[in-house]
Image (cartoon, rainbow, N blue to C red; front, side, top):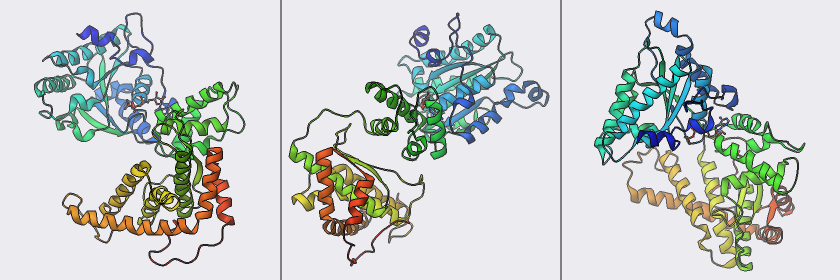
Amino acid sequence: MVLALYQTGALRGASTTKVAASGAVSVPDVRFDDIGGQAAAKKELMEAIEFITRRDQIARMGIRPLKGILLTGPPGTGKTLLAKAAAHHTDSVFLAASGSSFVEMYAGVGAQRVRDLFRRARETARKERKNSAIIFIDEVEVLGARRGSHTSHMEYDQTLNELLTQMDGIAVDEEVQVLVMAATNRVDMMDPALLRPGRFDRTVSVDLPDKEARLAILQLHTRQKPLADDVDLEAIARQTFGFSGAHLESLANEAAILALREGLGQVHQRHFVEAVDKVMLGEKLDRKPTPEEKRRVAVHEAGHALVGEWVEAGSVATVTITPRGQALGYVRTHPADDRYLHTRTALEGRIRVALAGFLAEELVFGEASTGAANDFDQAVRLARHIVHAGLSQLGIVDPETLNRDLEGAVVQQIIADQREMVAWFLAERRPVLEQVAEILVDAEVADGDQIRRLLADAPPLPPVQGPAVPVEA
Ligand code: ATP
């Protein structure tokens, strides 16, 4: 069993790091400089692993060794990379396993695997004449979830107990200093015993990158790629709010593939722009919509785009009706800055944009279609967010105890108010709506500047009655 675990590559490091002749995993070739952004996480981690590099001093001072570091954060943000860089920095051998690889239906197997992993870490370090070993356990929540929370809990509990025992056994005067690093995005599920001092007593949070960090990651992943002069990575960093490091790596890769497909020797900005869509929504589809469907999608997307510009001038980057992934068409926006806080006005603005596709269809064709289902979900989520954030007329509420009917009524009212405004706006701007839809039917794509020019040529909007006209600062 145990052999099978190692041979099937459950030790993930084996594929990406140098494998010594003995089959053992040696020090990975990843440096902290190879990781874009994550400045706070890197600093915290470097401080934490100092005890390996300053081992003698730590022992002299009688300080107990740090045994476990927990890296928490969404998938693809560089937790594995950080663990590898920590191993490189401390000249430690690196062994990686996934929490799920310890889980077996046979009692005792998981615990045996944990024991083997620790034994192997020490053996490998000794063989390679290293003083330290880093064991990295990804998806540790599978193995470290609260005891008793699994249905076949005996086996899970034994495995977790074994991990605790092994961590308790780590001592500062050992020949090989072992450090366990574990990654999870569900720290809430972890058994409290694992988070106690002496176990995973350092938690380093590894978040999604901000704009600067996205730029740094893009720069890292385009280092080896021939870039044309028109490439503006900063613009790409601006348009990729919410992307993880893994998304950005894939984006850089896809851009180069697109350039290669065109037979070009350099990657151009348009390849990066298309790669953003591809990573976000999936591959272009060959699905051919009927002419009526195409016009409907064009009107729907034109509605989103016009209302997008109304709510935040300059925010629309491109609109396309090329089917991709699950989407029949889409509007890509480029917000001026990453946003983490939203006012009620801003959230209402986003509700307006979400409702615009449906209402544009209703205006032009007399009835809407099922294509707007996702938009409604989004509108309801945003309205609920207004209520839960204490920004509605209900004031501060406890979402847990909030009466569902009352919440439903307020959500409906918020949406109805925005719906009225959007319907008014689209009726006023119907000629532009139809012009943009025409462009989309012909060319499948319209860029933000084209739309802004058409809007600028339109007569001024008359004053409105009812809820105030939006416009986010
Ligand atoms: P998961 O939780 O899904 O295992 P993770 O947080 O461990 O994800 P990694 O495996 O470290 O993520 O990252 C996956 C890939 O994404 C890396 O191999 C690298 O190419 C890229 N990547 C992620 N974050 C960064 C970053 N900060 N800098 C450079 N590349 C990154």
